[in-house]
Image 1 (cartoon, rainbow, N blue to C red):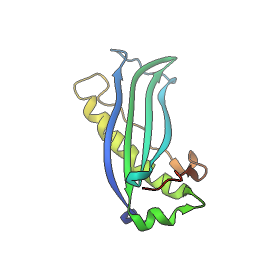
Image 2 (image 1 turned 45 degrees about the vertical axis):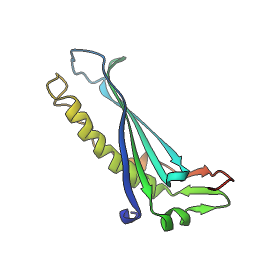
Image 3 (image 1 turned 45 degrees about the horizontal axis):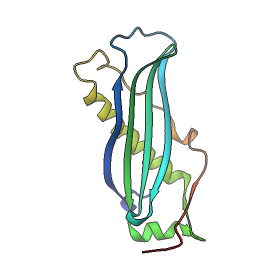
Amino acid sequence: MQNTTNIKLDFIKVDEFAILQNEIVFSTKTGFKTDFIFRLVEKKRSIGCVISLSLINEDNILLKLKTTVAFGMYEEFYNSLINDNKLNAPKEFLVEITEIAINIVRGILFTKLEDTIFNKILIPIFDVSEIINEDEVFSLNKDKE
């Protein structure tokens, strides 16, 4: 596990939220679909974990939440990840920030679903390290400010 003293929380932004159905009948075909992407903001030395989450029943999307959780990296740590004008974000680092971001998304979902029929739904626990399989490499701008 990485040392979280190398990062700080920059911002949390709900990019999209929608309840698309007003009722739910749970079945064995009810579940969450989750996607992750990472974005680098060079001038802020920040990496964003964008989590898209959908609750699906049969083939119907019941609700959607897309959230960006951005983590700033302190200069020494940021510079240690750069080689040949590329930033190499190690898998372990990505797993760690994704786990933190998912927990933040759990809290956002809980507050967004208060007073709805979905208020008891929990995002299941899963092993992020089984989903994120490799380092992420970002090309850096050649023109540094």
